Image (cartoon, rainbow, N blue to C red; front, side, top):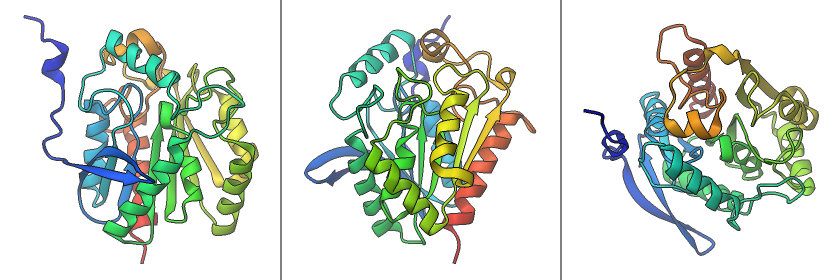
Length: 273
């Protein structure tokens, strides 16, 4: 008998569900772990079981993880039709700027507030920020919050209409570049070769903005999991999600190395005396 998609949902039972309010806007956040904090933003279409698995890896590395609910159904397996509906709603939401030239997404300010909140709760030298897919570039704009010291930009897919553009306003871009240079930050980034949503042109735009502070790493297309969940197979349709849907949990695999590099990057910066 074929299992239904809901059989594969993740109840997130080992996370604490809380509400965080920033500037009068309240959102659900799922929290787990101890130690310095990492804000892990979900990829489209939401906090999938694969996103939750990645959060647990961060937790098991000795860090706290704050996963905000930004779209979709928390814990849901990424089915094609439901995921496509979530994507359509997000594309017209006032919180996100999906097209080139429309500036920084307003939700980025809320996420910076979440980073401040997490730093106040967990302490340490600062906070990590990981964006993926739809939220990929948010990890970069979050460095406008001084508490954020370890940004990871995974396969950023916005803006959707310009593969060579970044989802950030001009003033914010200049401020981000200045902060990265002033504080000696590094920005770690990943994409698959031939990703239709995060192209080499986009990584070139990051390097043009950040110079050597941008460490963009590209995995071969054939390293991607060939059997991702239906949303990624039918809607995304290309190798895209390095540490979630297209991850292959085999020793020595390129996606495993990428995961371990991210965990080491976070630990090095967030656990420093």
